[in-house]
Length: 172
Image (cartoon, rainbow, N blue to C red; front, side):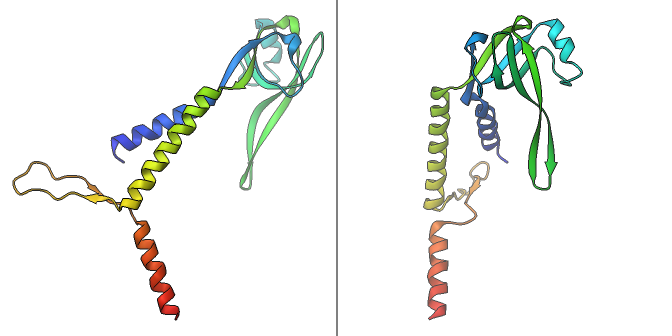
């Protein structure tokens, strides 16, 4: 795979999480269904160490209930594959407000999401144009330097249309 193509895939994969961001909120404003990230005190993190394996002091989850004393979170802890489907296993965890240092709400970043969609549309358009034009095969000049790269798609739309017409003619 050429370096440019590998680099473009790397950039695209790195940009996928860019659609989301976190904004600090007051724990009192939380409502059920909100996706959040909470930074816990050392005491609370130690208490949850047996319940949530691998959790340091940062917990991500969805709010199930919220009241004056704290909130109940649904925290993903593992994934299990059953046949061809992937199932997420969750744990319900009660966090008291006095043991939570900071709460951040997960939100869609519209600007980054729009830019990612626009970049994807441009890349798709360029790929479609390349396929429609049939690719270019550059010929080397005698005595010229390195041989040029061969750039040709596996198929062209023109080839597909000719194949379809030939099949239709054979049926008649």
